[in-house]
Image (cartoon, rainbow, N blue to C red):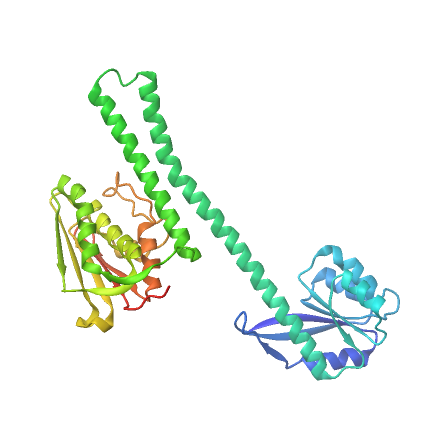
Length: 380
């Protein structure tokens, strides 16, 4: 439970004591932010004393009498307004007027409480101020988190694109300066390295577009009855050239007529990511086994897609963070393997759209098995 500090400034002792008694055991539920709030009340009998207390430790809520001897409530407001404190001021007065309200509001007063007031009226006003204060605080926290995430996102993207751009620029400078000589084989190798790096950047841009469209909800979805096995076969055909180049065997086991209502492009992204990763992180001469079926042996349980490889595998620690944005496992075995670090993050977000899940079982040097479960429902 969080405790909000309340300062009541009034030259009448009875008023100060009454406020302290009314708020002593008072708590407020905060459903918008979660949790409960209590109040700790301190007092000031003059505007001067209130300014000293605010200067030392600003309260969260200030109950401020308008008519005070010496420095008035409005004077107090005018002096603290430039400080932009995280504080809500409630004016308490028996001499309310339009002019007073306008002047106080311009100086940052949050609410007004006319004298005389009941304990219930006081609690209702304090409850409203506390709720507004906590919601505003939560909004600022979320805004700051959004700025931090955006900065981190841009920083990572810049870092991931900087390396291949520098590599391509270096290769082109070699060709431009003639350092590579006239050997066509050397020149061809440089060109192939450039196209590989450019392909990696293109993949990252595509993944970024997919990621932002999914998270923003702006990716158009066309829900239809999709043959999952047919999509898996096409994905395997797409991966066949890379697999054959490394003597990797691809296989598919599929139950008859495995279909579900889905967006075909999303299922393609899931299968293409799983199979391409299984080939990319495999050993030469290894295997990739894809299986498609129904969860629990029945169509009502949803669809299960599993992709097993005989590749380099990974530790439990690496597996635990694998589905976060821009995560790539970096060690001596993954050196030279290009990737955006977004494929599995996109895969998890797509599985979430189908109220599904993604799991991985892996051991270093013994391969990995990724399993995606999709429920038999999808909404546009």
